[in-house]
Image 1 (tube, rainbow, N blue to C red):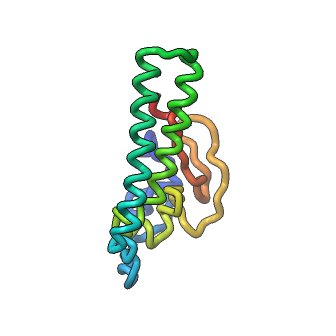
Image 2: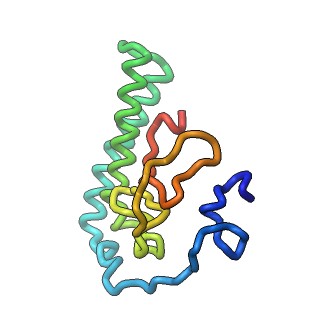
Amino acid sequence: MEEFVPGSQIIKELNGSEDWAYNYVEPVPGENDKMEDTETKKKLLAERNIIIKDYENATLEWIHGGEKSVEELRIRRNELANKLRDDYWKIDPYIRARSFYDRTGLINPGGKIQFYPGKTITPIQEGPNTAPPNGVNLVETSTEDID
């Protein structure tokens, strides 16, 4: 298993060194109250649809070529992709129920992921199969990850 996962992140019962045990965190009353606010949800979805349409148009212009250079079109499309990603987290509380991962701090506002909530965060080391011994950075993705 250590070929794919650092030993420090494999739980002890699987012969790793990670001292961890699963403990379920019960839902908190009211944690999903925003899902009942349909007016705000509709407003945010309408705003999101504008960004989606702009992204689709920018993608088509990038594919078919426009008056701007390919690089300018790519940059514009990536800006809109980032805006779309960031916008999701505004609407998230209105469309997705909170879960164990939200309650334990694994998923944080803005979609930031912290794999080891409550531990000191250290930078991720470079290279294959390396990870910090006591935690990881919050993980962000970008349009560069998918192109």
